[in-house]
Structures are given as C-alpha cells and as structure tokens.
Length: 167
Image 1 (cartoon, rainbow, N blue to C red):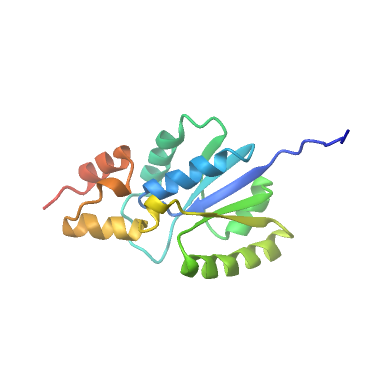
Image 2: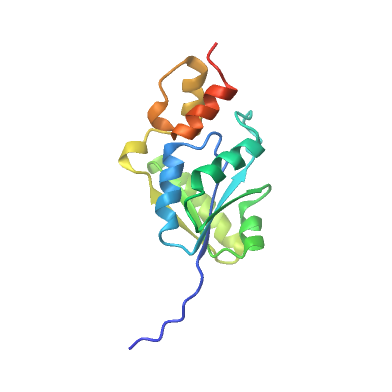
C-alpha cells in the first residue's frame, strides 16, 4: 500500500475580468474541482480603460462564485508571481482559447516559474462554446449594440445594462 501524504493544493487564476465572461466562469468551475483552494485574483489592466471598477469586479466575481466553497476572490496589483508567493500558492491556472493564447501564456508561465522559484502553470483549454469569447469582445458588443447574451452570465448582463445603458 502506498503511503501518500496529502498536500493542500492552492491555485491562483488571475485576470482583469472586465467583465467576467461565461468562459472565465467555466474555467473557474473546472479548475475548482481539482484544487483545495482556488483564488480568483482580480487585477487592474493599466493598458485598458475600466469597464467596471475594481470594486465592482470583485463584488461580481464573489457573487458568481459564492456557491463554490473552495473559491475565494481577491485583488492584487503588480506581478502575479509576487502575489502567488504572498499567498503561498503552488499552482497558477490559465485559460487558453487557441494557439495564439498558448504561445503568449507559455512565455508568461516560464517567467512566473522563474520568479516564483518553481510554481508551475496549468493551462485549461476553453470549452468549445466559449472559444470566441473575451472581455474585449464583450465590451465591443456592448459599445455597438451587439448581442452578448451567450457571452456573459446573467448577473453580468444585468450589471452591464445597469452601468452601460444603451444609448
């Protein structure tokens, strides 16, 4: 018989989540089943204008994940690697939609592994239904009156309508 010591597996899934999409929520659900604790780390993307404030994104993410007992939502700024070390996390989760995402994310994973002293990144491929979805596309659809219903959870759609009513 093997003698296996259990070790808590703490993972971090980071992003600007502005807004959080159906694809993001799918990755959160799927990642949460194989870790003891999943920290959804909301950050500010300094290169993009905010659609929702950090406070709004945190509140929305918390509400969307409140039924997931091993998921916590928090804010960070700066380098993800530094946040991972502060949390004592031993895994980084990243969702990938295709080859372009994978190429970029692989570079970031290598940097994070170096900066954290060995924390690996696990890539979770996007579900087929969400391959075309990104926060940027949702923002464009909202801006130009496109149909984004299937791209976001109902809670996010309500928040978008409230904050960004059609003109």
